[in-house]
Length: 451
Image 1 (tube, rainbow, N blue to C red):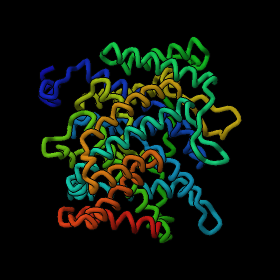
Image 2 (tube, rainbow, N blue to C red):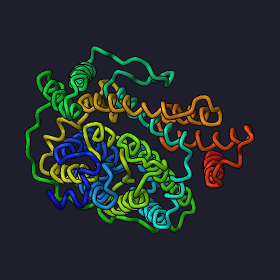
Image 3 (spheres, rainbow, N blue to C red):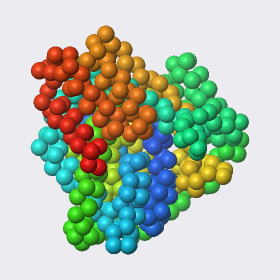
């Protein structure tokens, strides 16, 4: 216990071993869906599912534990949603010369972007970016991510769906079994939170699982299974195609761009939720967190993964009590344990396929309530924004709505970084804006022009 106290400073951070364990388990349960989504998505590119499952567990465990021990943050990592679809449809299935690029070349792209990402982190470029983010945008990013988390939860629950004709969100079928399960779990978790039960979100997840088993939505598939021994996607790089086609330069930049700004937004959002932002408005040890995230991408690519990045679902663990990197150690170990308990993890993280829809369309009713409630709690950061100051309020609002509406943290940040310096210039306060913010705004503009 003394060693844990010395490494993670539990008392200093106002937490306990029990709270960290609850937070770590909660984070894992809210992320467990990636263990089953990732193989399904990458299989579209022809990658063997068993090997991808093994790689997902190992790369997530490595990156998460590294973040916990080195940066001491309760921010878990795993292959990113969004990045995995980009990996498959924009790279692996991209046709050059009449033939698909292939997932091996896509892995090489991820590896190169990860190495560049690591170099940027090593020279504190990302730290400078984080320190230059205005306070109003930091608070808006945290709240915007909260709306994004809640939006994902509502979609995973089936409470909100996307109309196939108008492509606009609409109310889902509230009578469908998975949606009823999510609503029951939402009520149960709300009741626990209202009673101020410690670890309410974790207990809510477990209660929802039990409800699902009783109602037949969650299928019992056993408890223990032997881990797969398929390493065919490990170190399967095809650098030859990458170095012979200039088109890959753009793809490398896009992967790098997505990872840098998704991680930036996640660290700010989860850091604010956990009370990790210092009195000076900065995130301590951020440079170590960036290095860990970059290392996760590099090692993940070696394991055969699309970009490994920080997960906004970590906010659920923070809400359950996580305050230090010890929670990450628990989460990372659970990724390793999942290798032996895949059927058990499937009961929490596996999806319910939506009848008559795309084969990749699933609902995740067990974890959805946790995401909805955690997202709602993250919106409290809006009270820290000076809404009477137009130069702060408008960029903050655009960031706030941009993240969930664009369904992208990096695109939401773009709204803020482009509008903030412009409005400050119009307001006669252009000298108050950091040169780096001007530079980032220009980078985002160039991104939309040329990419």
